Image 1 (cartoon, rainbow, N blue to C red):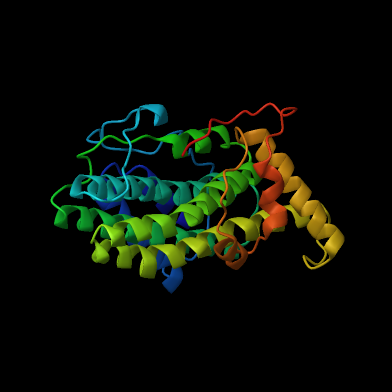
Image 2: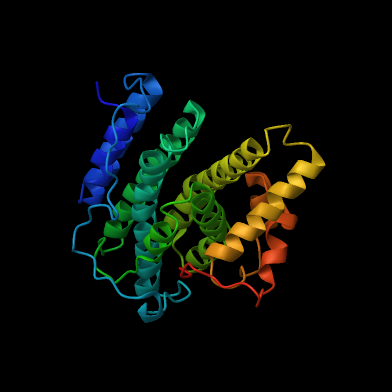
Length: 294
């Protein structure tokens, strides 16, 4: 019987983003319902692709070459915003299945780790499908505009370190999404697009908070496990975890984090200002190794 990791690889090797989302939803449901019973087969060493399968119908450019999205005042601007969000969600699907396939067995992670990221993957697939559908309602389609793959650049740079992957992708990037989504929602609403604003506000935004929660939770878990466990509420251990987070981010993320921060959403996700405020001041002594992606 197929394991979750084997199923995750099928998702990663599916090129069409709509089929990727559909297959991911099906696999997630099978795992949650107990149809897929094993996270992985300990006797099998499966190859995780360096880059997931993707169709070539989205023109890729570097982040610096991306056209400005605008402030949502025109239909063209609103289409660009939704296209950018849909593209981000398409990569978020792959990121969620990749962390399951790449690190779960290798790091001997508990079943709850797999379940948490299966839920994240299912959410991201739903977000992509809803946003792509909304884009068509707006007279456009996914692939109509250029996009960049900065998220996967960061994934590649953290492909051999689960702690770094959790910190950069599932804490820094996910939290950045929490910072900017309220402004995006306001711009869409001010531009008269209440339908997209409502989709982001009622579905995407609250679920993205839980995704950041998963990143923080498992970053803490790994740190505490390396310390010999202990209670996460122990203040000394909490401080050590935060110090480790600062160290990992400075090593794998170029430049300081950009304020303003959505303190309320970040707190709801499980980490307060002591986690990220010190990282908003540039540390010139640290040499970064991972390219910043917006």
